[in-house]
Image (cartoon, rainbow, N blue to C red; front, side, top):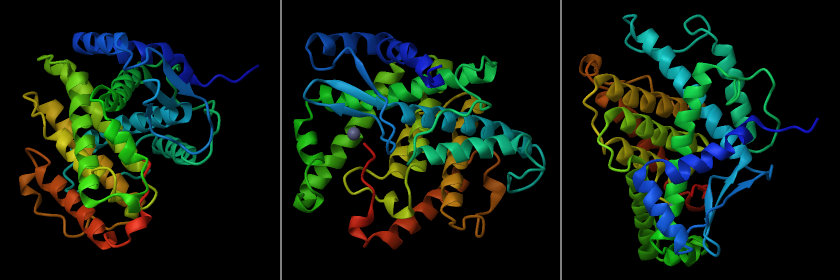
Length: 332
Ligand SMILES: [Zn+2]
């Protein structure tokens, strides 16, 4: 029997969420499609090579997403939510620093296996392992992941739409130029266009809806999308993005746009950032547990610890500042 990736079962819903995420996205995308600025079709690229983040084709207005990237994103979100749950449980014990290990976290082996597969997808395509959780395993948990995933992907696609909608001809010229041909002004311009596209994306995703529950599921999706892209960085040199704003900066901007009245939501967002940034530092073997600031201020929020983690990332960036051409530039 021919293999069909579980992620393919979400393709219809991806299109549905992309166009009809909310009344604003529906209106705006309909208008853009009528003006032939954005194509009504999404190109689901089955290409199994190196993983690629979503991108846009300016010549036909088509947005492209690679199948293995979607599998990567789904599984990363799955693990983030699992880790968040585990951390919440562990927080109830009185330890200052919560650490995951086989005795403290149930099913950690499963998360590890899943994580191993996610990392392997970055360079090599493989079929979705049979016994792994998936978008079609029918569990309530996976159904929740599906919804977060669909919002996360919509956010990334709206970022690409912004490049089309704002007539970013300049964007394409600049992004396709060789780095050494760009002046400082042009590099600055490119980064500004990216910030503008991020802002456009979150605005379109939230659609001006004042409902906190609706906003929360979208904001957590957008944050997990950016955190997933952080995990695609192969080495710490890649943190400093020459043509794009640094991902940690983008995360910071995103998470500071909204303060949720509901404390559980606010805590979950900050905890997710905490987990994502710690995981990145852990993968790259950067010591971040020593010299952790005084914890007395974190009980109400994670500001202190997040500032510490961002500081660690900044220190790493300073170290690699001079290795100009070593940065990976595939984060669109
Ligand atoms: Zn972009």
